[in-house]
Length: 256
Ligand SMILES: C[S@@+](CC[C@H](N)C(=O)[O-])C[C@H]1O[C@@H](n2cnc3c(N)ncnc32)[C@H](O)[C@@H]1O
Image (cartoon, rainbow, N blue to C red; front, top):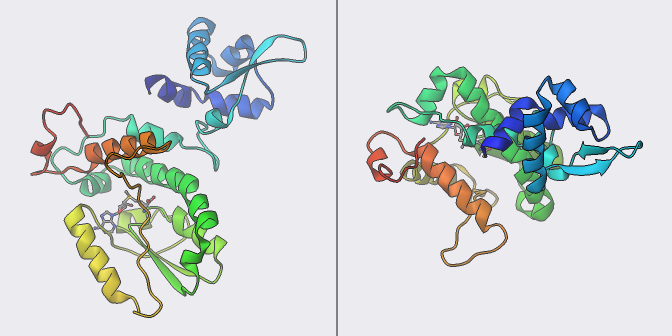
């Protein structure tokens, strides 16, 4: 994880992408203003993990090339999950507050969280839009509860133009949202249940529905996505415990 974070911070993928073709070690090291020896070792590791690959240039020199995975490490763009990785490798600590109060007082961290959620939405939403579009049939409006910076809602109203999107989040998050304006939201399981009950009370019985997008872990059942599901569960556990609940994870070595 540390090497991947280093690749993001150095913007290696962005530099190769904007170069437009594979880059030799000397090209890359001068573009990044980075010593070639450690850079060579970093790239060797990242290639070994299949994140970058080696190709021949037109002059038959070896050069570093992008892969679908390395494009995920670009700082910007629709394929980027850089913010998600930076968030999950950060040592953000809420110091006894709940995470959302901490983020309200720390705009830079709040922006990182919002960008991380948005990058996750850009990966997950196409699967929902193309995999189960029927879920949105017959709906007139859609409230995204705790919708972050509005990326999810923006993608949904674009894909299903008959939907009227209502973005619902904390005021300091909504004020930095991509396109929508609204307010309010939620934190732990008990409160989630309460919010979902309220949502269900608020919607019409014939046409309304509560749509939950969640990574499900079925005990004892493993598939090719189990690794991602279990890693997400660890990230959520580390990030979402607050004062009074922290004793539950103390001693596990997992920290928020
Ligand atoms: C884990 S993020 C999820 C973001 C987005 N739904 C997604 O999946 O990408 C949870 C969101 O809930 C919001 N939230 C937390 N407490 C809230 C509250 N009391 N009222 C409104 N929104 C809240 C946070 O600001 C954050 O944007």
